[in-house]
Length: 312
Length: 312
Image (cartoon, rainbow over all chains, first blue to last red; front, side):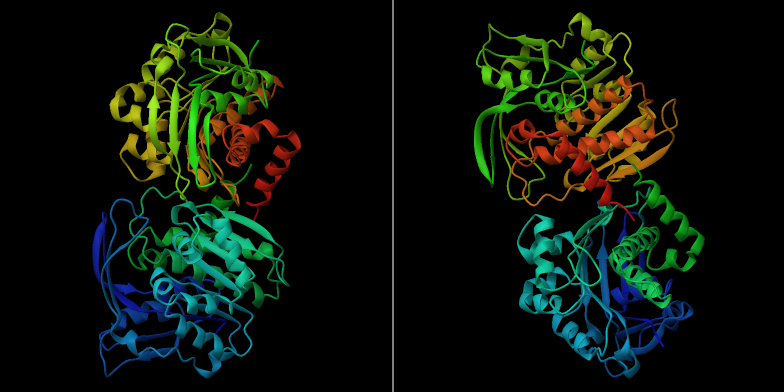
Protein backbone atom coordinates (compact mmCIF):
# COMPACT_ATOMS: atom_id res chain seq x y z
CA UNK A 1 0.00 0.00 0.00
CA UNK A 2 1.47 3.33 -0.99
CA UNK A 3 1.47 6.26 1.46
CA UNK A 4 2.00 9.02 -1.06
CA UNK A 5 0.70 9.27 -4.62
CA UNK A 6 2.54 11.59 -6.99
CA UNK A 7 0.85 12.55 -10.25
CA UNK A 8 2.89 14.28 -12.94
CA UNK A 9 5.31 13.86 -15.78
CA UNK A 10 8.10 11.39 -16.41
CA UNK A 11 10.38 12.60 -19.16
CA UNK A 12 13.61 12.39 -21.04
CA UNK A 13 15.61 15.59 -20.66
CA UNK A 14 18.40 17.29 -22.55
CA UNK A 15 19.92 19.87 -20.24
CA UNK A 16 22.78 22.30 -20.68
CA UNK A 17 24.23 24.47 -17.92
CA UNK A 18 27.55 26.32 -17.64
CA UNK A 19 28.81 23.20 -15.87
CA UNK A 20 28.01 20.60 -18.49
CA UNK A 21 25.53 19.01 -20.82
CA UNK A 22 23.48 15.82 -20.58
CA UNK A 23 21.16 14.05 -23.02
CA UNK A 24 18.20 11.69 -22.59
CA UNK A 25 18.50 11.76 -18.82
CA UNK A 26 15.66 10.91 -16.46
CA UNK A 27 13.51 13.98 -15.84
CA UNK A 28 9.93 15.12 -15.31
CA UNK A 29 8.15 16.58 -12.30
CA UNK A 30 6.88 13.23 -11.01
CA UNK A 31 10.30 11.56 -11.23
CA UNK A 32 11.88 14.22 -9.02
CA UNK A 33 8.93 14.51 -6.63
CA UNK A 34 8.45 10.76 -6.16
CA UNK A 35 12.18 10.20 -5.64
CA UNK A 36 12.29 12.87 -2.92
CA UNK A 37 9.10 11.59 -1.29
CA UNK A 38 10.54 8.06 -1.18
CA UNK A 39 13.16 9.09 1.33
CA UNK A 40 10.30 9.28 3.83
CA UNK A 41 7.35 7.16 2.69
CA UNK A 42 6.25 4.48 0.21
CA UNK A 43 5.39 6.42 -2.92
CA UNK A 44 3.43 5.55 -6.06
CA UNK A 45 3.69 7.28 -9.41
CA UNK A 46 0.89 8.20 -11.77
CA UNK A 47 2.21 9.13 -15.19
CA UNK A 48 2.71 7.91 -18.75
CA UNK A 49 5.80 6.80 -20.68
CA UNK A 50 6.55 5.57 -24.21
CA UNK A 51 8.38 2.60 -25.67
CA UNK A 52 11.62 4.56 -25.82
CA UNK A 53 11.77 4.91 -22.03
CA UNK A 54 14.95 3.06 -20.98
CA UNK A 55 14.84 0.27 -18.45
CA UNK A 56 17.85 1.87 -16.73
CA UNK A 57 15.75 4.94 -15.93
CA UNK A 58 12.92 2.81 -14.64
CA UNK A 59 15.49 1.00 -12.48
CA UNK A 60 16.51 4.28 -10.85
CA UNK A 61 12.96 4.84 -9.61
CA UNK A 62 12.14 1.22 -8.79
CA UNK A 63 15.35 0.69 -6.83
CA UNK A 64 14.17 3.54 -4.62
CA UNK A 65 11.02 1.48 -4.00
CA UNK A 66 8.71 3.65 -6.09
CA UNK A 67 5.52 1.88 -7.15
CA UNK A 68 4.84 1.83 -10.90
CA UNK A 69 1.22 0.58 -10.90
CA UNK A 70 -0.05 3.97 -11.96
CA UNK A 71 2.38 4.44 -14.83
CA UNK A 72 0.78 3.78 -18.20
CA UNK A 73 2.86 2.45 -21.11
CA UNK A 74 1.76 4.31 -24.20
CA UNK A 75 2.76 1.47 -26.48
CA UNK A 76 0.94 2.54 -29.62
CA UNK A 77 2.29 6.05 -29.70
CA UNK A 78 5.78 5.22 -28.69
CA UNK A 79 7.65 8.25 -27.50
CA UNK A 80 8.08 9.57 -23.96
CA UNK A 81 7.58 13.23 -23.06
CA UNK A 82 10.77 15.19 -23.82
CA UNK A 83 12.12 18.47 -22.55
CA UNK A 84 15.17 20.36 -23.69
CA UNK A 85 16.36 23.26 -21.59
CA UNK A 86 19.37 25.40 -20.83
CA UNK A 87 20.55 27.62 -18.01
CA UNK A 88 22.92 30.53 -18.25
CA UNK A 89 25.13 31.75 -15.41
CA UNK A 90 22.11 33.08 -13.59
CA UNK A 91 20.74 29.63 -12.78
CA UNK A 92 17.40 30.89 -11.48
CA UNK A 93 15.41 30.22 -14.62
CA UNK A 94 15.55 27.56 -17.31
CA UNK A 95 15.23 28.54 -20.93
CA UNK A 96 13.04 25.92 -22.55
CA UNK A 97 14.46 25.13 -25.97
CA UNK A 98 12.01 22.40 -26.94
CA UNK A 99 9.05 20.51 -25.45
CA UNK A 100 7.65 17.37 -27.09
CA UNK A 101 4.48 16.19 -25.35
CA UNK A 102 4.48 12.79 -27.10
CA UNK A 103 2.85 10.20 -24.79
CA UNK A 104 1.68 12.96 -22.46
CA UNK A 105 -1.03 13.85 -24.98
CA UNK A 106 -2.70 10.56 -24.08
CA UNK A 107 -2.36 10.92 -20.33
CA UNK A 108 -5.74 10.33 -18.69
CA UNK A 109 -4.67 10.68 -15.05
CA UNK A 110 -6.59 7.59 -14.00
CA UNK A 111 -5.66 6.32 -10.57
CA UNK A 112 -5.32 2.57 -9.89
CA UNK A 113 -8.09 1.51 -7.46
CA UNK A 114 -5.79 1.26 -4.45
CA UNK A 115 -4.37 4.75 -5.11
CA UNK A 116 -7.86 6.24 -4.81
CA UNK A 117 -7.69 5.55 -1.09
CA UNK A 118 -4.36 7.39 -0.73
CA UNK A 119 -4.20 9.91 2.10
CA UNK A 120 -1.29 12.01 0.78
CA UNK A 121 -1.42 13.13 -2.82
CA UNK A 122 0.94 15.42 -4.72
CA UNK A 123 -0.80 16.76 -7.81
CA UNK A 124 2.17 17.98 -9.83
CA UNK A 125 2.05 20.72 -12.41
CA UNK A 126 -0.29 19.71 -15.23
CA UNK A 127 -3.36 20.75 -17.19
CA UNK A 128 -5.78 21.87 -14.44
CA UNK A 129 -8.55 19.77 -15.97
CA UNK A 130 -6.42 16.69 -15.32
CA UNK A 131 -5.56 17.96 -11.86
CA UNK A 132 -9.28 18.29 -11.09
CA UNK A 133 -9.85 14.79 -12.44
CA UNK A 134 -7.22 13.43 -10.04
CA UNK A 135 -8.78 15.24 -7.10
CA UNK A 136 -12.26 13.89 -7.94
CA UNK A 137 -11.00 10.29 -7.86
CA UNK A 138 -9.73 10.55 -4.29
CA UNK A 139 -11.97 8.85 -1.76
CA UNK A 140 -10.67 10.08 1.56
CA UNK A 141 -7.63 12.31 1.16
CA UNK A 142 -5.96 13.78 4.20
CA UNK A 143 -3.64 16.16 2.33
CA UNK A 144 -3.71 17.22 -1.31
CA UNK A 145 -0.77 19.37 -2.38
CA UNK A 146 -0.80 20.93 -5.83
CA UNK A 147 1.69 22.77 -8.01
CA UNK A 148 1.02 24.74 -11.20
CA UNK A 149 2.93 26.80 -13.74
CA UNK A 150 2.80 29.91 -15.92
CA UNK A 151 1.54 28.08 -19.04
CA UNK A 152 -1.69 26.97 -17.33
CA UNK A 153 -2.14 30.30 -15.59
CA UNK A 154 -2.01 31.94 -19.01
CA UNK A 155 -4.30 29.62 -20.92
CA UNK A 156 -6.64 28.15 -18.24
CA UNK A 157 -6.62 30.56 -15.34
CA UNK A 158 -10.20 29.87 -14.17
CA UNK A 159 -9.53 26.14 -14.05
CA UNK A 160 -6.31 26.70 -12.11
CA UNK A 161 -8.26 28.74 -9.56
CA UNK A 162 -10.93 26.02 -9.37
CA UNK A 163 -8.29 23.36 -8.72
CA UNK A 164 -6.69 25.52 -6.01
CA UNK A 165 -10.08 25.79 -4.29
CA UNK A 166 -10.15 21.98 -3.92
CA UNK A 167 -6.71 21.33 -2.40
CA UNK A 168 -5.30 21.68 1.09
CA UNK A 169 -1.96 23.14 0.10
CA UNK A 170 -0.72 25.13 -2.87
CA UNK A 171 2.98 25.12 -3.77
CA UNK A 172 4.14 27.43 -6.55
CA UNK A 173 6.98 29.78 -7.33
CA UNK A 174 7.10 33.54 -6.85
CA UNK A 175 6.68 34.35 -10.54
CA UNK A 176 3.59 32.17 -10.75
CA UNK A 177 2.18 33.69 -7.55
CA UNK A 178 2.58 37.20 -8.94
CA UNK A 179 1.14 36.25 -12.32
CA UNK A 180 -1.88 34.36 -11.00
CA UNK A 181 -2.95 37.04 -8.51
CA UNK A 182 -1.77 40.06 -10.48
CA UNK A 183 0.32 41.59 -7.72
CA UNK A 184 4.05 41.92 -7.08
CA UNK A 185 3.42 41.61 -3.35
CA UNK A 186 3.83 38.00 -2.28
CA UNK A 187 1.91 38.46 0.98
CA UNK A 188 -1.07 39.76 -1.00
CA UNK A 189 -0.76 36.87 -3.46
CA UNK A 190 -0.65 34.36 -0.60
CA UNK A 191 -3.69 35.89 1.09
CA UNK A 192 -5.64 35.72 -2.15
CA UNK A 193 -4.66 32.07 -2.56
CA UNK A 194 -5.67 31.25 1.02
CA UNK A 195 -9.03 32.94 0.44
CA UNK A 196 -9.76 30.41 -2.33
CA UNK A 197 -9.67 27.47 0.08
CA UNK A 198 -6.25 25.97 0.86
CA UNK A 199 -5.16 26.10 4.48
CA UNK A 200 -1.52 26.59 3.52
CA UNK A 201 0.24 28.33 0.67
CA UNK A 202 3.94 27.87 -0.04
CA UNK A 203 5.80 30.23 -2.34
CA UNK A 204 9.11 28.86 -3.64
CA UNK A 205 11.81 31.48 -4.25
CA UNK A 206 14.71 29.39 -5.57
CA UNK A 207 18.00 30.45 -3.96
CA UNK A 208 16.06 32.80 -1.65
CA UNK A 209 14.24 29.92 0.06
CA UNK A 210 10.50 29.55 0.52
CA UNK A 211 7.63 31.31 2.28
CA UNK A 212 4.76 29.58 4.06
CA UNK A 213 1.48 31.30 4.81
CA UNK A 214 -1.20 29.48 6.79
CA UNK A 215 -4.68 30.46 7.89
CA UNK A 216 -6.73 29.38 10.87
CA UNK A 217 -8.00 25.84 10.24
CA UNK A 218 -8.31 22.49 11.95
CA UNK A 219 -4.56 21.91 11.50
CA UNK A 220 -2.93 25.33 11.48
CA UNK A 221 -3.12 28.82 12.87
CA UNK A 222 -2.74 31.99 10.84
CA UNK A 223 1.02 32.33 10.59
CA UNK A 224 4.04 33.05 8.41
CA UNK A 225 7.22 31.01 8.09
CA UNK A 226 10.29 32.05 6.14
CA UNK A 227 12.56 29.15 5.13
CA UNK A 228 16.12 30.05 4.11
CA UNK A 229 17.84 29.04 0.91
CA UNK A 230 21.04 27.00 1.20
CA UNK A 231 24.18 28.77 -0.01
CA UNK A 232 25.71 26.29 -2.47
CA UNK A 233 29.16 27.11 -3.81
CA UNK A 234 28.43 25.29 -7.06
CA UNK A 235 25.01 24.70 -8.56
CA UNK A 236 25.39 22.28 -11.46
CA UNK A 237 21.77 21.85 -12.52
CA UNK A 238 18.67 23.25 -10.80
CA UNK A 239 16.25 21.16 -12.91
CA UNK A 240 13.68 19.48 -10.70
CA UNK A 241 14.49 21.39 -7.51
CA UNK A 242 10.92 22.66 -7.15
CA UNK A 243 9.51 19.17 -7.62
CA UNK A 244 12.09 17.71 -5.25
CA UNK A 245 11.03 20.31 -2.69
CA UNK A 246 7.35 19.37 -3.07
CA UNK A 247 8.07 15.65 -2.93
CA UNK A 248 10.24 15.95 0.16
CA UNK A 249 7.57 18.06 1.83
CA UNK A 250 4.68 15.64 1.29
CA UNK A 251 6.86 12.60 1.99
CA UNK A 252 7.88 13.96 5.39
CA UNK A 253 4.27 14.78 6.31
CA UNK A 254 3.14 11.28 5.29
CA UNK A 255 5.92 9.75 7.38
CA UNK A 256 4.85 11.80 10.41
CA UNK A 257 1.25 10.67 9.93
CA UNK A 258 2.45 7.04 9.70
CA UNK A 259 4.09 7.52 13.05
CA UNK A 260 0.79 8.80 14.45
CA UNK A 261 1.92 12.38 14.80
CA UNK A 262 -0.36 15.36 14.24
CA UNK A 263 0.07 17.49 11.15
CA UNK A 264 0.47 20.87 12.78
CA UNK A 265 2.37 24.07 12.06
CA UNK A 266 5.60 22.71 13.54
CA UNK A 267 5.47 19.57 11.38
CA UNK A 268 4.73 21.61 8.27
CA UNK A 269 7.68 23.94 8.92
CA UNK A 270 9.99 20.96 9.32
CA UNK A 271 8.57 19.44 6.14
CA UNK A 272 9.44 22.64 4.28
CA UNK A 273 13.00 22.52 5.57
CA UNK A 274 13.37 18.84 4.60
CA UNK A 275 12.05 19.75 1.16
CA UNK A 276 14.62 22.55 0.96
CA UNK A 277 17.42 20.24 2.09
CA UNK A 278 16.60 17.70 -0.62
CA UNK A 279 16.26 20.41 -3.28
CA UNK A 280 19.66 21.84 -2.35
CA UNK A 281 21.28 18.43 -2.86
CA UNK A 282 19.42 17.93 -6.14
CA UNK A 283 21.04 21.06 -7.60
CA UNK A 284 24.52 19.66 -7.00
CA UNK A 285 24.45 17.40 -10.06
CA UNK A 286 22.51 16.68 -13.25
CA UNK A 287 19.23 14.75 -13.35
CA UNK A 288 18.84 12.53 -10.25
CA UNK A 289 22.56 11.75 -9.99
CA UNK A 290 23.17 13.45 -6.66
CA UNK A 291 19.93 12.13 -5.18
CA UNK A 292 20.92 8.54 -6.00
CA UNK A 293 24.00 8.86 -3.78
CA UNK A 294 22.29 10.79 -1.01
CA UNK A 295 22.46 9.32 2.51
CA UNK A 296 20.32 9.92 5.58
CA UNK A 297 23.35 11.22 7.43
CA UNK A 298 23.85 13.90 4.78
CA UNK A 299 20.19 14.90 4.96
CA UNK A 300 20.24 15.21 8.74
CA UNK A 301 23.52 17.10 8.71
CA UNK A 302 22.23 19.66 6.23
CA UNK A 303 18.94 19.95 8.16
CA UNK A 304 21.05 20.96 11.16
CA UNK A 305 22.97 23.46 9.03
CA UNK A 306 19.63 25.03 8.08
CA UNK A 307 18.89 25.37 11.78
CA UNK A 308 22.27 26.90 12.58
CA UNK A 309 22.09 29.50 9.84
CA UNK A 310 18.76 30.75 11.18
CA UNK A 311 19.71 31.06 14.85
CA UNK A 312 19.69 34.51 16.48
CA UNK B 1 30.66 62.34 22.86
CA UNK B 2 29.15 60.43 19.97
CA UNK B 3 29.20 56.63 19.89
CA UNK B 4 28.60 56.20 16.20
CA UNK B 5 29.80 58.34 13.32
CA UNK B 6 27.88 58.12 10.05
CA UNK B 7 29.49 59.55 6.92
CA UNK B 8 27.36 59.99 3.81
CA UNK B 9 24.87 62.13 1.98
CA UNK B 10 22.07 64.37 3.20
CA UNK B 11 19.73 65.21 0.37
CA UNK B 12 16.45 66.57 -0.84
CA UNK B 13 14.45 63.88 -2.61
CA UNK B 14 11.61 63.80 -5.08
CA UNK B 15 10.14 60.31 -4.99
CA UNK B 16 7.26 58.73 -6.85
CA UNK B 17 5.87 55.26 -6.16
CA UNK B 18 2.54 53.63 -7.08
CA UNK B 19 1.35 54.82 -3.66
CA UNK B 20 2.10 58.51 -3.96
CA UNK B 21 4.52 61.27 -4.74
CA UNK B 22 6.59 63.56 -2.52
CA UNK B 23 8.86 66.51 -3.25
CA UNK B 24 11.83 68.07 -1.45
CA UNK B 25 11.63 65.53 1.36
CA UNK B 26 14.53 64.67 3.65
CA UNK B 27 16.69 61.97 2.06
CA UNK B 28 20.28 60.83 1.61
CA UNK B 29 22.11 57.76 2.90
CA UNK B 30 23.43 59.47 6.04
CA UNK B 31 20.01 60.82 7.04
CA UNK B 32 18.48 57.34 7.00
CA UNK B 33 21.50 55.60 8.56
CA UNK B 34 21.99 58.12 11.36
CA UNK B 35 18.29 58.16 12.20
CA UNK B 36 18.24 54.37 12.52
CA UNK B 37 21.48 54.30 14.51
CA UNK B 38 20.06 56.88 16.93
CA UNK B 39 17.49 54.42 18.22
CA UNK B 40 20.42 52.68 19.91
CA UNK B 41 23.36 55.07 20.38
CA UNK B 42 24.39 58.73 20.23
CA UNK B 43 25.16 59.33 16.58
CA UNK B 44 27.06 62.05 14.74
CA UNK B 45 26.68 62.95 11.08
CA UNK B 46 29.43 63.84 8.63
CA UNK B 47 28.01 65.34 5.47
CA UNK B 48 27.42 68.59 3.59
CA UNK B 49 24.27 70.65 2.92
CA UNK B 50 23.44 73.88 1.09
CA UNK B 51 21.60 77.05 1.98
CA UNK B 52 18.34 75.63 0.67
CA UNK B 53 18.30 72.88 3.30
CA UNK B 54 15.14 73.54 5.35
CA UNK B 55 15.33 74.00 9.10
CA UNK B 56 12.36 71.63 9.41
CA UNK B 57 14.47 68.81 7.94
CA UNK B 58 17.34 69.62 10.27
CA UNK B 59 14.84 69.54 13.12
CA UNK B 60 13.84 65.98 12.24
CA UNK B 61 17.43 64.79 12.73
CA UNK B 62 18.28 67.01 15.69
CA UNK B 63 15.12 66.08 17.59
CA UNK B 64 16.34 62.50 17.38
CA UNK B 65 19.54 63.68 19.12
CA UNK B 66 21.77 63.44 16.07
CA UNK B 67 24.94 65.53 16.36
CA UNK B 68 25.52 68.04 13.54
CA UNK B 69 29.14 69.03 14.27
CA UNK B 70 30.38 67.17 11.24
CA UNK B 71 27.88 68.67 8.82
CA UNK B 72 29.39 71.40 6.67
CA UNK B 73 27.24 74.26 5.39
CA UNK B 74 28.26 74.90 1.81
CA UNK B 75 27.18 78.55 1.95
CA UNK B 76 28.94 79.79 -1.16
CA UNK B 77 27.55 77.20 -3.49
CA UNK B 78 24.12 77.10 -2.08
CA UNK B 79 22.25 74.01 -3.12
CA UNK B 80 21.91 70.70 -1.31
CA UNK B 81 22.41 67.34 -3.05
CA UNK B 82 19.20 66.33 -4.82
CA UNK B 83 17.87 63.00 -5.98
CA UNK B 84 14.80 62.28 -8.01
CA UNK B 85 13.64 58.68 -8.31
CA UNK B 86 10.65 56.52 -9.07
CA UNK B 87 9.53 52.97 -8.37
CA UNK B 88 7.14 50.91 -10.41
CA UNK B 89 4.99 48.10 -9.02
CA UNK B 90 8.06 45.96 -8.60
CA UNK B 91 9.45 48.03 -5.74
CA UNK B 92 12.80 46.27 -5.66
CA UNK B 93 14.74 48.85 -7.63
CA UNK B 94 14.55 52.63 -7.91
CA UNK B 95 14.77 54.27 -11.29
CA UNK B 96 16.93 57.36 -10.86
CA UNK B 97 15.42 60.18 -12.90
CA UNK B 98 17.86 62.90 -11.87
CA UNK B 99 20.85 63.39 -9.58
CA UNK B 100 22.23 66.86 -8.79
CA UNK B 101 25.43 66.65 -6.77
CA UNK B 102 25.40 70.38 -5.87
CA UNK B 103 27.11 70.85 -2.47
CA UNK B 104 28.32 67.23 -2.56
CA UNK B 105 30.98 68.27 -5.11
CA UNK B 106 32.69 70.18 -2.30
CA UNK B 107 32.44 67.46 0.31
CA UNK B 108 35.86 66.86 1.85
CA UNK B 109 34.88 64.19 4.39
CA UNK B 110 36.85 65.85 7.17
CA UNK B 111 36.02 64.56 10.62
CA UNK B 112 35.71 66.95 13.58
CA UNK B 113 38.56 66.19 16.05
CA UNK B 114 36.35 64.37 18.55
CA UNK B 115 34.89 62.15 15.80
CA UNK B 116 38.38 60.86 14.96
CA UNK B 117 38.31 58.93 18.22
CA UNK B 118 34.99 57.28 17.35
CA UNK B 119 34.88 53.53 17.84
CA UNK B 120 31.93 52.76 15.54
CA UNK B 121 31.94 54.27 12.09
CA UNK B 122 29.53 53.76 9.22
CA UNK B 123 31.17 54.79 5.98
CA UNK B 124 28.14 55.16 3.73
CA UNK B 125 28.18 54.78 -0.02
CA UNK B 126 30.45 57.43 -1.56
CA UNK B 127 33.46 57.97 -3.80
CA UNK B 128 35.92 55.33 -2.50
CA UNK B 129 38.69 57.97 -2.35
CA UNK B 130 36.59 59.84 0.20
CA UNK B 131 35.81 56.59 2.02
CA UNK B 132 39.55 55.89 2.28
CA UNK B 133 40.10 59.43 3.54
CA UNK B 134 37.55 58.86 6.32
CA UNK B 135 39.16 55.58 7.31
CA UNK B 136 42.63 57.20 7.48
CA UNK B 137 41.41 59.85 9.91
CA UNK B 138 40.23 57.30 12.47
CA UNK B 139 42.56 56.95 15.45
CA UNK B 140 41.33 53.83 17.17
CA UNK B 141 38.27 52.37 15.49
CA UNK B 142 36.68 49.24 16.84
CA UNK B 143 34.29 48.63 13.95
CA UNK B 144 34.25 50.22 10.51
CA UNK B 145 31.28 49.26 8.35
CA UNK B 146 31.21 50.33 4.73
CA UNK B 147 28.64 50.35 1.95
CA UNK B 148 29.22 50.96 -1.76
CA UNK B 149 27.22 51.04 -4.99
CA UNK B 150 27.27 50.12 -8.68
CA UNK B 151 28.45 53.58 -9.87
CA UNK B 152 31.74 53.33 -7.93
CA UNK B 153 32.23 49.67 -8.80
CA UNK B 154 31.98 50.68 -12.46
CA UNK B 155 34.25 53.71 -12.44
CA UNK B 156 36.66 53.10 -9.52
CA UNK B 157 36.70 49.37 -8.89
CA UNK B 158 40.31 49.16 -7.66
CA UNK B 159 39.67 51.91 -5.10
CA UNK B 160 36.51 50.18 -3.92
CA UNK B 161 38.51 46.97 -3.38
CA UNK B 162 41.19 48.94 -1.52
CA UNK B 163 38.59 50.49 0.78
CA UNK B 164 37.05 47.08 1.45
CA UNK B 165 40.48 45.78 2.48
CA UNK B 166 40.58 48.40 5.26
CA UNK B 167 37.21 47.85 6.91
CA UNK B 168 35.86 45.29 9.36
CA UNK B 169 32.52 44.78 7.72
CA UNK B 170 31.17 45.21 4.21
CA UNK B 171 27.45 45.77 3.62
CA UNK B 172 26.21 45.82 0.05
CA UNK B 173 23.34 44.52 -2.01
CA UNK B 174 23.19 41.37 -4.10
CA UNK B 175 23.52 43.18 -7.43
CA UNK B 176 26.62 44.99 -6.24
CA UNK B 177 28.11 41.77 -4.85
CA UNK B 178 27.63 40.03 -8.20
CA UNK B 179 29.01 43.00 -10.16
CA UNK B 180 32.06 43.58 -7.99
CA UNK B 181 33.18 39.95 -7.89
CA UNK B 182 31.94 38.94 -11.34
CA UNK B 183 29.91 35.93 -10.21
CA UNK B 184 26.18 35.24 -9.86
CA UNK B 185 26.91 33.03 -6.86
CA UNK B 186 26.55 35.04 -3.66
CA UNK B 187 28.56 32.58 -1.57
CA UNK B 188 31.47 32.93 -3.98
CA UNK B 189 31.13 36.74 -3.92
CA UNK B 190 31.12 36.75 -0.12
CA UNK B 191 34.18 34.52 0.07
CA UNK B 192 36.04 36.81 -2.31
CA UNK B 193 35.09 39.83 -0.21
CA UNK B 194 36.19 38.11 3.01
CA UNK B 195 39.53 37.26 1.39
CA UNK B 196 40.19 41.00 0.94
CA UNK B 197 40.18 41.65 4.68
CA UNK B 198 36.79 42.20 6.33
CA UNK B 199 35.81 39.73 9.01
CA UNK B 200 32.15 39.94 8.06
CA UNK B 201 30.28 40.47 4.81
CA UNK B 202 26.58 41.22 4.66
CA UNK B 203 24.64 40.93 1.42
CA UNK B 204 21.31 42.77 1.42
CA UNK B 205 18.58 41.16 -0.69
CA UNK B 206 15.66 43.58 -0.24
CA UNK B 207 12.41 41.70 0.35
CA UNK B 208 14.38 38.42 0.51
CA UNK B 209 16.27 39.47 3.64
CA UNK B 210 20.02 39.51 4.16
CA UNK B 211 22.92 37.06 4.26
CA UNK B 212 25.84 37.25 6.67
CA UNK B 213 29.14 35.49 6.03
CA UNK B 214 31.90 35.61 8.64
CA UNK B 215 35.39 34.19 8.74
CA UNK B 216 37.53 33.10 11.65
CA UNK B 217 38.80 36.20 13.46
CA UNK B 218 39.18 37.61 16.94
CA UNK B 219 35.44 38.29 17.08
CA UNK B 220 33.78 35.69 14.86
CA UNK B 221 33.98 32.14 13.62
CA UNK B 222 33.53 31.10 10.03
CA UNK B 223 29.76 30.93 9.71
CA UNK B 224 26.68 31.78 7.66
CA UNK B 225 23.49 33.48 8.85
CA UNK B 226 20.35 33.94 6.79
CA UNK B 227 18.08 36.77 7.97
CA UNK B 228 14.51 36.66 6.69
CA UNK B 229 12.72 39.51 4.97
CA UNK B 230 9.55 40.85 6.57
CA UNK B 231 6.35 40.31 4.56
CA UNK B 232 4.79 43.77 4.36
CA UNK B 233 1.28 43.99 2.92
CA UNK B 234 1.95 47.52 1.62
CA UNK B 235 5.34 48.96 0.78
CA UNK B 236 4.89 52.69 0.19
CA UNK B 237 8.48 53.76 -0.41
CA UNK B 238 11.61 51.59 -0.11
CA UNK B 239 13.99 54.58 -0.39
CA UNK B 240 16.61 54.45 2.34
CA UNK B 241 15.87 50.91 3.50
CA UNK B 242 19.45 49.74 2.87
CA UNK B 243 20.87 52.73 4.77
CA UNK B 244 18.36 52.24 7.57
CA UNK B 245 19.47 48.61 7.78
CA UNK B 246 23.14 49.60 8.03
CA UNK B 247 22.44 52.33 10.59
CA UNK B 248 20.34 50.06 12.78
CA UNK B 249 23.05 47.39 12.59
CA UNK B 250 25.94 49.61 13.71
CA UNK B 251 23.80 51.42 16.27
CA UNK B 252 22.87 48.18 17.95
CA UNK B 253 26.48 46.98 18.04
CA UNK B 254 27.61 50.31 19.54
CA UNK B 255 24.91 50.06 22.19
CA UNK B 256 26.04 46.54 23.10
CA UNK B 257 29.64 47.76 23.40
CA UNK B 258 28.46 50.63 25.62
CA UNK B 259 26.90 48.05 27.88
CA UNK B 260 30.23 46.23 28.04
CA UNK B 261 29.08 43.27 25.97
CA UNK B 262 31.32 41.41 23.54
CA UNK B 263 30.82 41.83 19.82
CA UNK B 264 30.43 38.18 18.86
CA UNK B 265 28.51 36.23 16.26
CA UNK B 266 25.32 36.23 18.35
CA UNK B 267 25.41 40.03 18.76
CA UNK B 268 26.04 40.52 15.05
CA UNK B 269 23.11 38.29 14.11
CA UNK B 270 20.83 40.26 16.42
CA UNK B 271 22.17 43.51 14.96
CA UNK B 272 21.22 42.29 11.48
CA UNK B 273 17.70 41.50 12.63
CA UNK B 274 17.32 44.91 14.31
CA UNK B 275 18.56 46.49 11.08
CA UNK B 276 15.98 44.46 9.16
CA UNK B 277 13.22 45.44 11.58
CA UNK B 278 13.97 49.16 11.18
CA UNK B 279 14.24 48.85 7.39
CA UNK B 280 10.86 47.12 7.22
CA UNK B 281 9.24 50.00 9.11
CA UNK B 282 11.01 52.55 6.93
CA UNK B 283 9.33 51.12 3.80
CA UNK B 284 5.88 51.74 5.26
CA UNK B 285 5.89 55.46 4.41
CA UNK B 286 7.74 58.12 2.43
CA UNK B 287 11.02 59.68 3.56
CA UNK B 288 11.50 59.34 7.33
CA UNK B 289 7.80 59.70 8.12
CA UNK B 290 7.28 56.22 9.55
CA UNK B 291 10.56 56.31 11.46
CA UNK B 292 9.55 59.53 13.21
CA UNK B 293 6.53 57.81 14.74
CA UNK B 294 8.31 54.55 15.53
CA UNK B 295 8.24 53.36 19.16
CA UNK B 296 10.46 50.91 21.04
CA UNK B 297 7.46 48.69 21.66
CA UNK B 298 6.88 48.40 17.92
CA UNK B 299 10.55 47.56 17.31
CA UNK B 300 10.60 44.86 19.97
CA UNK B 301 7.31 43.41 18.78
CA UNK B 302 8.52 43.11 15.21
CA UNK B 303 11.86 41.69 16.40
CA UNK B 304 9.83 38.93 18.06
CA UNK B 305 7.84 38.41 14.85
CA UNK B 306 11.15 37.89 13.03
CA UNK B 307 12.01 35.23 15.59
CA UNK B 308 8.64 33.51 15.24
CA UNK B 309 8.65 33.41 11.47
CA UNK B 310 11.90 31.50 11.19
CA UNK B 311 11.33 29.01 14.01
CA UNK B 312 11.27 25.34 13.07
